[in-house]
Image 1 (spheres, rainbow, N blue to C red):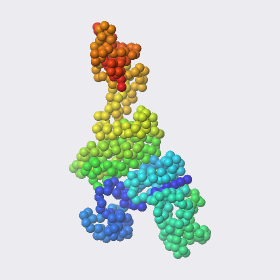
Image 2: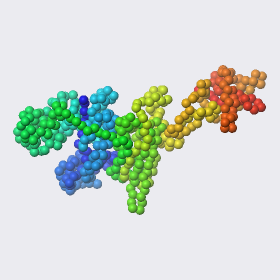
Image 3: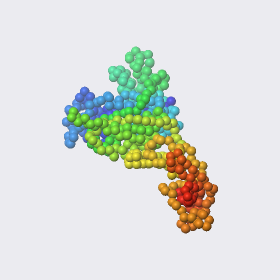
Image 4: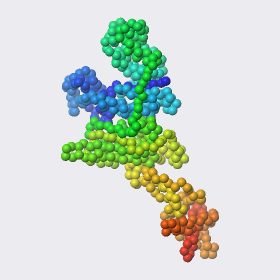
Length: 496
């Protein structure tokens, strides 16, 4: 087995800054019970320290705006970890949520994502796109080992190949005990007898250590080394996707919401991948500030995708186009992203777009969806085949996101690429009765294809169609009218 552990050391602060776009550069800190529990680099550079009172910290920061002080919120932290877990669900269904991070069992995913190093980079990039800036990662054969290495190892920025037992033995006792929530009294006792690392604790007589209250620590060490069972509670994603995010500052312009939208799109993409689904219709709900006298309803941006997808970049691009075209009726204080319709998407489906290659097909579909998001779905059309033998009625244009099925039975005879909107009457050679085009007779190169239809709706046609070659070597589609007093020739289409 191979476990990846992700630890969020700045979770109390990043839970508040999840929807911030970085434009506010004021120093900030998080307080709990009027004491600083976490501060960013800018605040620490000005002298703010953990454990300092909130009033003392605020007095150290002068200038415009001063120090941003946030009250620690366990609800926001849980929501941040939940968003991260859903974002990472695209890599493996074996996922464990912890209070300040997550664990992924990835042994079954290595081949799919190109090996351990490629998967390591992908997991790290998705975590950062989900709003995690301060991130520590570790890999190990057991979940407990990966979790403690991520929290207690001095450096865990890269995937290491060192022996995991040696790395565990070298961990400082205090940091490992804090990660496992071992009582500080026991750590002081072990320090008093010369134990500085987990390796030192392992060398102690087991019976004597247990009598002195070290049973919990010894059990955690055994699970980390794979010498004892290490059961985990798997993360269960919700049955439906609807996720909200409260903004740090009120947004007056819809364009300011793009950054926060990304924090919701990443969990959506992970949820879709975990469920083997693709998004077909989405709704982005913008919640406005209200007052007693003015209670404005939410603004809902509905997005219908012409080609369902679970690609986060594509979904974010389309939502960004719609947001840039949206005028806010009032400032927005929160966002809600809701999945309205999803379709099965077990793999890369075959499609007409892919005949020229997968890359060009994905680009074409992305372009169509982007045009629909920018111009409006009713302004981007696609051809739809109709079950009608009359050429001028065998196709119609519908909005590109219209899910109406087309007629599957295509004519077996040749059809031109360009069909004239109205048939063009041709002159005729009076001696031989042949059609003329640009003053020269056409050479008929096919037998007559008789089309007679329309008696059911009062628009009857009766024609004999031919493929003809003009003097400039173009191939034309012409017909001779069989109804009426005179049978005339008409040009109806041009082949590509």
